[in-house]
Image 1 (cartoon, rainbow, N blue to C red):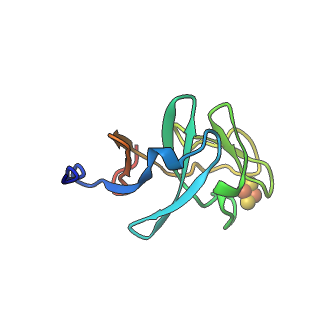
Image 2: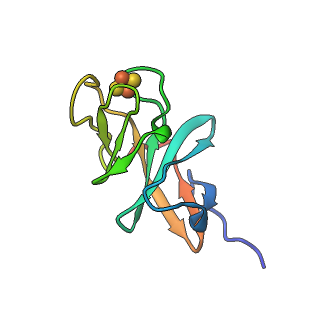
Image 3: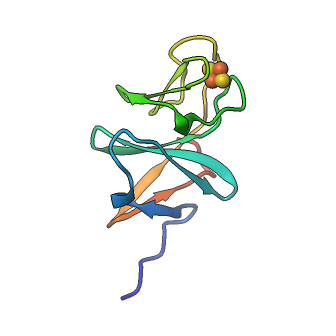
Length: 112
Ligand code: FES
């Protein structure tokens, strides 16, 4: 059986079943580090690098649709990438996600 082609600009990054609820999953999409988070019935894709320093967000905790940077504690909204508090002041890029069957597709060429 052939796999349907991914929509233009989107790349398959993993199977939906690989994502555990509220546990960030780091992937690379076209050389861009991305943290995938399955939470509250949705899958979000956020750039994996904190906007405050060069730290992997996927090592942080997920709560209330936010991912917390483990180093200094800023949390970023998974829907918008905006920080909810200092020390980070700049948002982190977030990317559109599509679920096709059991495939998780992400586009890093368009920020959502
Ligand atoms: S490195 Fe993320 S909040 Fe400082």
